[in-house]
Amino acid sequence: IDEYSIKATRTLYIGNLQSEISHNDLRELYSEYGDIIDIEIKRQQSSNSQIFAFIQYTDIKSVVKAMESKIIRDHSIKVLKHLIN
Image (cartoon, rainbow, N blue to C red; front, side):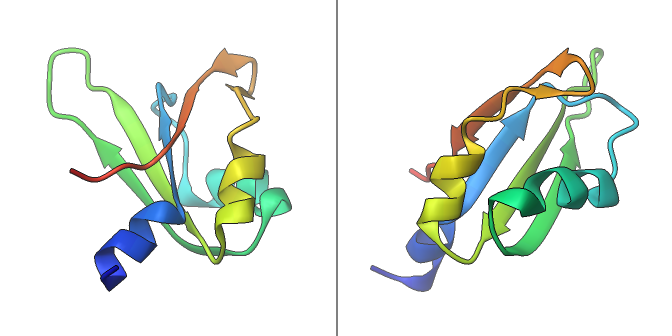
């Protein structure tokens, strides 16, 4: 297993985010599940401008715990373990 694969197994994908979400918001909401290494917020350039994020944890247990979260500020989100091809 290379480092890229190891990173992916500790990374959470969060989709359907609201446009005003910030790194600080995500860190505050998701640090309760474990130690966060990195947060990346991405904005897909399209007509509906989808916003999603990747949160990398120090261990996979944190990812599994964080996958239980489904709502941020009364807004439904999509939470998945990040997979690579």
